[in-house]
Amino acid sequence: MNEADSERVMIFDTTLRDGEQAPGCSMTLQEKLRVASALRDLRVDVIEAGFPAASPGDFESVRAIAAEIDGPVICGLARCHAGDIERAWRALQGARRPRIHVFIATSEIHRTYKLQMAKEEIIRRAVESVRLARSLCRDIEFSAEDASRTEPAFLADVVAAAIEAGASTINVPDTLGYTVPDEFFDLFRYLKEHVAGVDAVTLSVHCHDDLGMAVANSLAAVRAGARQVECTINGIGERAGNCSLEEVVMALRTRAGHFGIGTGVDTRRLYPTSRLVASITGMHVPRNKAVVGENAFAHESGIHQDGMLKHASTYEIMRPEDVGLSRSNLVLGKHSGRHAFRERVQQLGFKLDDTELNRAFTEFKKLADRKKEMFDADIEAIVMSSEGEGTGPWTIEELHISAGTGAIAAGAVRMKHTDGRLIDEAAVGDGPIEAAFKALERATGVDMELRNFEVRSVTTGEDAQGEVTVTVEYNGQSLRGLGVSTDIVEAAAFAYLDVINRICRRNLAPGSDVTRSTGHAAAV
Image (cartoon, rainbow, N blue to C red; front, side):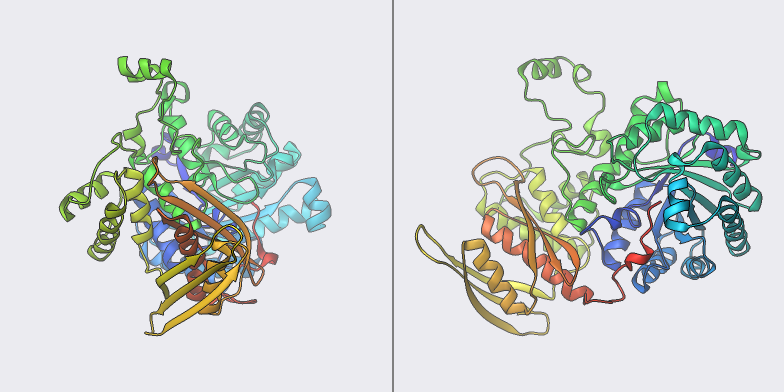
């Protein structure tokens, strides 16, 4: 580990790899590039772009990110198999700062039931894999999967062997979110005391949140000497998720006097990056989420409000501006111009090109005609639906719904395809939303099964926008869609159409290149 790195904690973002493994969070190539660009602007140190051996789609996304994203280290994951490692290197070759990340499970339960390998075989595989990776790339990270449930003495042996073979970063994952802070602190201290050469490498930590302690465990590891934290935006990931990037970064910043070390992250980009990932994945941020939730800086209690008016520090330990969250409420109206809209979008931390800005401004004007008051959250919702690749190939030209007490609900749609086709379809359902969904399926020819339906208010008031999130199953894949409108039925239709367009864009089908093979799922 070089001297510069020892003075701060490196942030290793795995949103595009571990985060994407959460059900329904898969992304298209263009979506991954948008997230990678946001992570670069956030100034994370390492972007784990994917698992190249998992599928051709993963390989292509890692290769594209390696070629197009300059600044952070671009990392690809590989099992301790020669084929995985060589494929990872082929995907990473275009990166200016590539890293190959190899892993193998080390705990007794994994050795016995998953790998069926003896301790000696685990060490041999680890050494051979690190050496092969090191022959291709200078920057090698080694992970001992399920390290927190591995016998400390054996873990020390594996780590020592990996260091001697050429690993420059050693990751100690709490793969199942099983450990607790003081126990994890002791494990890192044990490795620091019993592994030869450990001070010459970067110790890393990768925690899952099964018991709600991923951030606490990661911070305990930092106190014990870890200088890289592996985390995801909004804490997304398999099962209960991963260590939340925004939480660990702001904990180190807010309690700098306690930890004595910080990060290189531009914290003003935390909120817009959080919203971008939420929009792309369809996993909206809970209102009470620490740091980036809508209630994180809200004060309703009279006592709290009185204290805030006297001095903000009475009830705020962080400034909302420091995470990129605006203090303002009512901002723009239907008479506001394009320049004012652009300025507000930039103040909120978003970057739009001219095409995206024009599309967002058009939607803003439409919404302003329907709402009495416009809030920052309204603008954010518009921007999220306007950024990046178009939503096509299908758009809703007209939507008509008929429903009432004791009457059969009916929905009629006119759909337009990017190839110029206009399709009219109608359907009936148990309610207006089901009728709209069935009409959309008939018009587009995409049949899906609805698994979950969520609705929430974007802002306040009777004319507030409603945000609908749907989770559907299509060909064994779990997919999410997001729609926003002042009309809940319309928002639901937009959300359902969002999924339909995702399916059409990716051409999802059993065995499709972009689907991840379950046999390759990584659980570092």
